[in-house]
Length: 222
Image 1: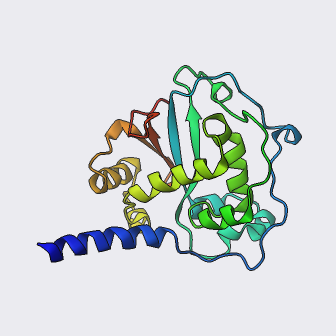
Image 2: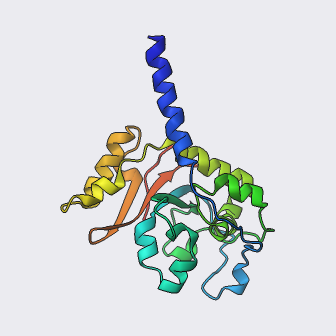
């Protein structure tokens, strides 16, 4: 009995550790701060109530395929076959929002996160600018520090059991329902209304999983 329990714990720990192993850039960006005021496509919504969160998981091959060639060649995430389903962000959401601009966003400006923090979470979110931008755009509306935001994401991400996405996408009959079923089978506490799978044809774009303010699974609101 003790042997079986040890093996179960070992498999769990290995699965967590596997998510934290990846290739690092040879050189790190010196500047990756985010200032929404300098971006014409950005806005601030500071008075919206946070009712729940969306953990957004992005499928790297589709993300990289859609980038212009020059940008793709500059994006570390796209240089190797190391990254599959990565964390794009953890978004504060409002149930009463009618458009994207009604959700909490860019609640305060913050300084550039320490590189040590970036390195600690890089395998989960493979980009200095990605981590910084997601913290300032979405994390500042609900969390006191970038470290608290990223540690929360890491904990939730490590609790998920990710099915073999590559294998699923090899099926010529694959659709959002098959991918959702694979997630539900691996994560019995996750409900069918608590995740959204977004695909373009046979290409997986992203998966969103919703959490309440106590960080338990909850229904998603589109």
